[in-house]
Image 1 (cartoon, protein in one colour):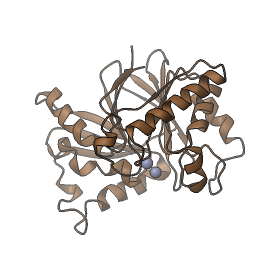
Image 2: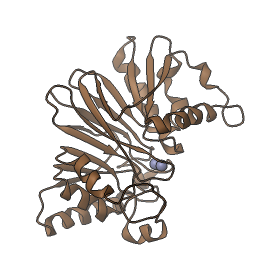
Image 3: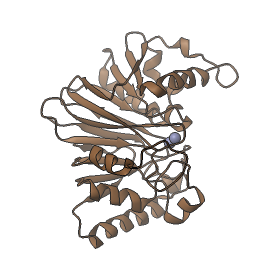
Image 4: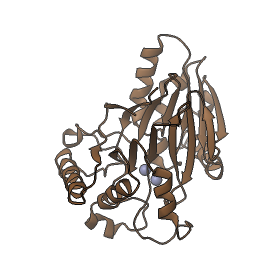
Length: 289
Ligand SMILES: [Zn+2]
Ligand SMILES: [Zn+2]
């Protein structure tokens, strides 16, 4: 049994379309996850979910689409694709928005508020699919998967996921978008937060992690809730991860610049004598876990 992961949106903060970002992609975060039993989980609903919607309709061939949409938090770049997710307008489909209990109220508020008259012509109630909101517990079991959550270091809070095959408990995908690994004030995390995070990530087959900043950029954006490349590589090494996928790319990072950062991360791995494969998330690519 395997988990299949497809990247529909990889960019952080704001969509960044254009010739210079065409390879890694300009859509904001959205990841499709298929379990070994073919159940569908959607991780975040940035603009990448628009194309996912068309793909799901095509693959479903008229049959109902059922999915849980796990939202790491309600910042704009993680929800702004929802009004353009076409299956929500179709009767017979069923979607459950899920978030950590402390964030779920804010998530529902934000999803509805981004479809009010001042900012959008169609209201949230126009969706003809069945729509539910349900809190995500710290530990969950679903169709073909088991899931654990962890709070992240991000302004307003965000949630990371560890998702494993439901039967074997392995291998694991860890999805951590919008997380600050550097030292910054303003988070309620306990002093041992990094050790706890290493434990959470420990032994993952695939770690998808926020990698928004270079070291220079980070100094100008400390406390904004994102990580520099070096810290992400070190976390993956310390946790014994097999494959690290850099994610939530800076909107100004061109394909060429991102390739250079990726090469620098790979160099850091070899300098430390570690065994870790490092990739950068690219829109339209599929990985199996
Ligand atoms: Zn974000
Ligand atoms: Zn955010």
